[in-house]
Length: 624
Picture 1 (tube, rainbow, N blue to C red):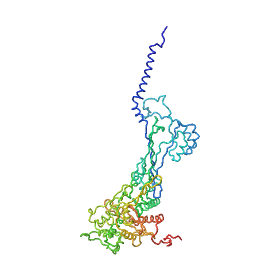
Picture 2 (picture 1 turned 180 degrees about the horizontal axis):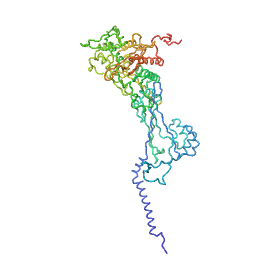
Picture 3 (picture 1 turned 90 degrees about the vertical axis):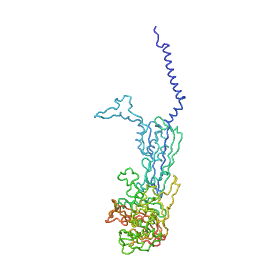
Picture 4 (picture 1 turned 60 degrees about the vertical axis):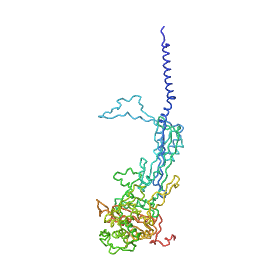
């Protein structure tokens, strides 16, 4: 009789093999869970643990009346994992479709589509033949479909809507961590002041950059674990820190005034076709800027579309570019001579001379744009813009004192406004380096280079009663509740001249707009004293002054006897429609007047004299 397969030897061998296998597994488990546990747990923790950053909302930038100049929009991208949808949530689908504005049938299609086709095997084409890169045919076991675990329902959902979606409690419908994008509701408005934040979240220029510390806030974070599909396991969250919203920054800019300034710049660009132009409006009493714009400009929401050839559009030329101030600089020599007691407004000078004796040498006097046949008083030197007269005032001061007064007015140094945009200090050489003719040219604004902002605040010295104010544009730092955490106030950099001298010079400047006495009668506004100065300087082209290219300016303030606003209009290489030189009185003064007339109505600036067509009792605030 044959013996069966199950001999004692084979049974023992099989049992020993099974026991050895289980023993090996057991030994391995003991090694993993007991002996080597600490090291492996550390490794697993590193793999499974994650830090999820919750971005903070950037603060808003507001104008002086609380209107948005820059804000942040949250982008909540809503999606669904069709694999975990519950049948009991199906009655909630119509409400979800309504909230996100998606047709119910389309939403149902997304929810019920649980797989998608797998992409074909990668191939390359050579010589017209399709070749499998692996060199093998796809196997029969290669999956042709893949489970869908994320399907987008909406690109951007508002926070209030998302809160309602969360309350629906539809399992599988969720949003990744929200992100914020910067938005500029007014597009080009105050572009060079506000600045922008690029796609990487970096503040590039303007207030966005200067106030980034206040605006950006503090990101939050949470520590949790993720599964093998890299999805968060919310039940294992260990620590969570909520994000802290950034502070709001309120500017002194007034959107209404800013819009008027930019509209006037658009008119100037269309009418006179200049290379560029700048207009600045500030509060004469505090130095806070109410409007500042340059042309050409750019759209803050489309900064990335500005081509390389047009990058100059993004420069804040009001603080970055320099130009010769021309006759607007004459207030320096006049103020200095009056302050030192060297002249009185009624003193006269011969402005027909071609040469004059100075420190034992005969000096050439500059040419005049206008010819005068009689001696001019100091007041007339300013109102009629005499180059020869300004040169003689400068020679009375001599080099050292003229240099010191020019520096005191802010020329050749930073204004303190560099926090908004990289600023130029201008060009103004020490008097020890002046040439023999500089004493006759500098008083009329030649061989000096200044930014439009420096020229504006030099005139502001006269308007403020003799003090050089720091240009300011940020008024308050606010929290989310609108409470002011810090307020910026008026900053006096230094006293330049006395109040009495400033008042005298203001009276002289008010003659500039008087018909028959000044160079800009067209800028006069009945009932209001306009104190201003025209400027027309030749541009340097190919190393020498050009008679065909000019910078025209009109800088002033009103009312002269109680200044409220300072306005500067500076036009680079404008062309007069009637032909001839684009003088400041022709190219810049009309814009000054239109802005001033708007400010009179908007800021309710009271007249200082009778207004034609208005009854006298209206001046006293009495209604008929």
